[in-house]
Image (cartoon, rainbow, N blue to C red; front, side, top):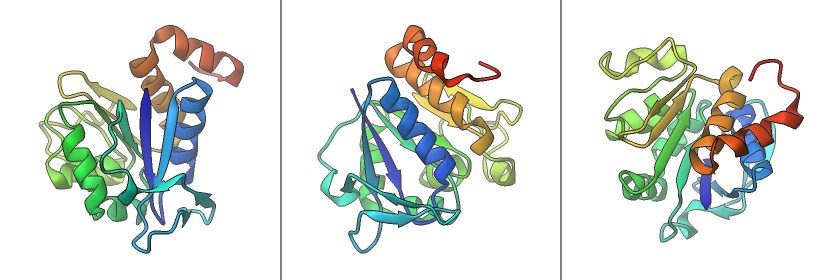
Length: 187
């Protein structure tokens, strides 16, 4: 089971690293892909943290994933939105696997490309960009089983979001096993 986590300059590091870390703790094969325009692997995240990807997104367009999980952050979400190789992968993924997005990414990336068909949430600052018919603003994590889409609100929901992704991909027992040593106050 493989998951792709694309990152770009300005991606929200708390969201990206939380997803990558928890998915890997659960034994899920995670590929981190840079969406830089220069083909480089290193990005500077939204708070100045440097992250180094495993591959550049342009080398992965023939790969298939159980899930593509997008961090938010600005201008990271805009750079993900504008990545042609990532759009190719997201378009192929729809109906063939899960798509997950947190913070600005549901509105800026997914909605911009018509990839939200059912219920979703996003960071409150971007909720006006989602059609009211799709928005579930009171939920920190929204799972749309019919469209295989998981969305979440922001950095403060990143742990719950990542654990939800684990449950979808590997089951409730794996979620519990992954969460137990984290000493979460709420789970």
